[in-house]
Length: 307
Image 1 (cartoon, helix red, strand yellow):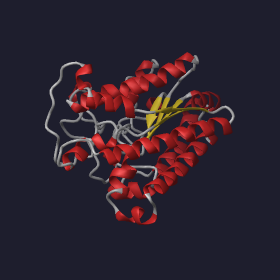
Image 2 (cartoon, helix red, strand yellow):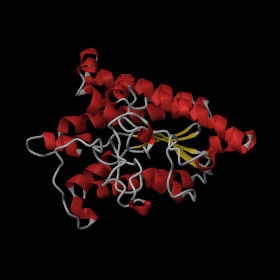
Image 3 (cartoon, rainbow, N blue to C red):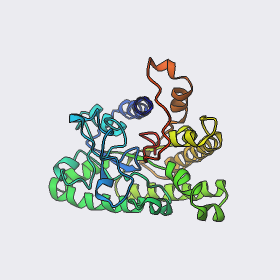
């Protein structure tokens, strides 16, 4: 099952982050997450959009077999990371009314499936734009200070692990679908436009107290089920994969530059491309499994963890 193996690949990616941080003997009192459906734990359940996953078969392997709004069959990679640090076994969605600040004090996700760096991307499906995620984070800071007190709240915000996983929708839901950006930018210029937004977001996040940040790159998005289904050969669309590799190279350069420019910043680039592509092209390396037909209907679960 493709979604299960995608989950495994993503977990391997995030374990790389853990190794880097644990090696540095980092203290991680909380996991704070921004992004798209790769890390949305149910925020879109509270948004009037079709980009939801609060129905079966989603969540069939989650606690109680309940769909929560996570775009996968069980837990997200960020949930496993939280548990690995001795925190909760899952990171709750900030807009989920079932949770409160006592839950969010050790982990929270502001992510929204279908969103992107570009504000125009969130408009496509009427989801939460990245700038709004940052506004929710500011609100979270106020609530955390009221709950923990200034001293402990500052310690939590300073030492938390911040995870940013976003970008696929900017290309697959926006640039290659809606004509506006294609008339404004070449694909390379659009990538640079997104890099500028990523830079500003990280700088703003750091100015609000974040120090340990993981920035995820794009997966082989040409191999997502929908893209393969639209390809007559039922194979990966290499044009999209090439764009993903190019954008990842730009993100990697950005990470190196920001680490040099901003004192005290610990910014890590986590590139899922090679790991995921290997699992897609050489699945037998990861044990026996059943290949299911590529879906022909769009479910906004493009690859369960990277849409």
